[in-house]
Length: 343
Image 1: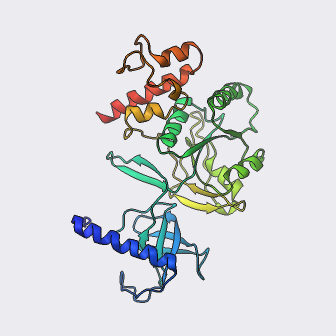
Image 2 (image 1 turned 180 degrees about the horizontal axis):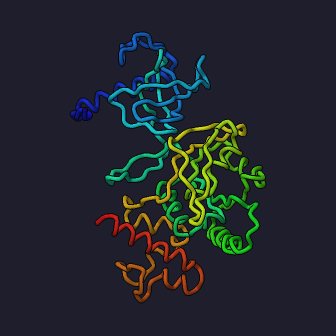
């Protein structure tokens, strides 16, 4: 059955009711018990965090009260907007299921278009997007730049994590070291770690302390291995590389939230090979290349496409080695892929 359409007045009333619930939860006041989804005896409204989403149900971790730290499977009120891992909510305990009655406003969200082009949130209240890459499978700057654009466009802090530093293949590390140097020169933080030996993990734990992070990266770079090393209780499934193709198999199927002993929080999301950016305008894309920003708006022509026009400030910056040619090429590749995907 399709979701019923609500009038603006109905939507306004629903928002008002949810705001009242949020205020009551803040005050810690008791409320009248309502019959919801055939559950008669529900507990008082308390705050929580969505740690997993299964479509029609979510797992919520209680953030206060006697249930603090407990994870409860919950239904959702039908008038709620979709919930994602990381959402802060107001919910009520019940047997066998609790009920989520309101969602607290997000301070950030990671979004991407679905197969129909509609924007869908992937995770909420994220502080850091950790972009994982490795010598094997081969790291490509164009994919890294797509993740960086996604992070910058949504004002979420990115960090690059080079995994598998225990590999001793000289050829791979020659190109990887250049990649690390390039991104550091732009101003991005890059941490080098090994999920196998735990080398570099102290710095990684310090960085993630008191932050909510989401790990992204192509399959096979070791995201699940990193998570298991950071928090063994996560039990993230580790996939193997496909022989010959050197591409990993997708292993994570449901987004999940985990706490680390050092105070950080991690959202483990399904593996993503390609991060679609079709929802972004050309202006949003180019402004998401942080090394381009000092030169934007300084071209001779206001409608400059930054291709071969005379007086292009970006082309001048490239000739002066102030912008990397690879970054410039990746920008145009993103723009072309957007045009192709929109057809």
